Image 1 (cartoon, helix red, strand yellow):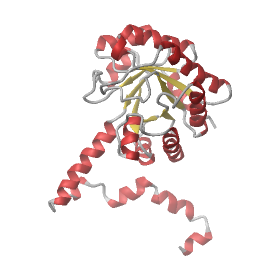
Image 2: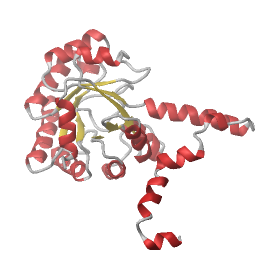
Image 3: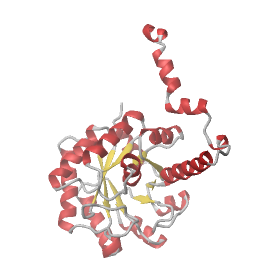
Image 4: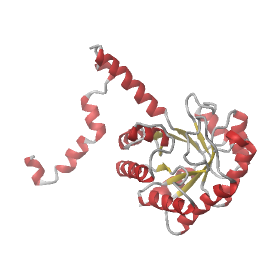
Length: 290
């Protein structure tokens, strides 16, 4: 059986855009897989909101994020890219982070060059570390791979925000030289900048599409034609779920009919996995007495 990292390598080897809705827990990841998508990413923004009810401002610990990733990989068979933030410390922490996500079954882990505590890439106040520190993070991530971690490295730079596109591209190019498998220049502001990123950087590139964010919301075909290998949608499911929940809560509070807004109970049970459980448990005699 191919490893999760090998599955992701196979997807990236295809000359096409991989559309990647982002999950925040095991259930959202299962729904992504059931909808027919080939991979997912555990959004730090959405996971922080879901797990601790707090903004993505470096409040979740490494252990909490790793635990959430392990729950997700246990629930799905498609590759998961995990959000390793800044690596949770110095270069040695980065090595531990990468190794831990590999053991948890992640196909790739994102390591970024933000100053800790990190911030969402489309919110104010973010800053990046020096080139030397940024490059050490990717060196450490590659060292973890060299030591046996079967995982890809998604290297992210947020340098565009304060230092301009040229600095961001220069950093990303060095990340690739140091061993990064996928490059991610966060928050380009125009189509022209997105084209420059794909033209000047080698290997697979990821676009991050935040509805209402700074990066243009292009169609899948437009993103593929520009040259992106992955299009991540980090908040689409979270925003959709929150909108639906607030609407249903308002109807429940005013005693309105909410049934048209709800998934029927039969489908809900099936998607969660009740029917799979019943089918598997039917092989065991003791379960028939339950």
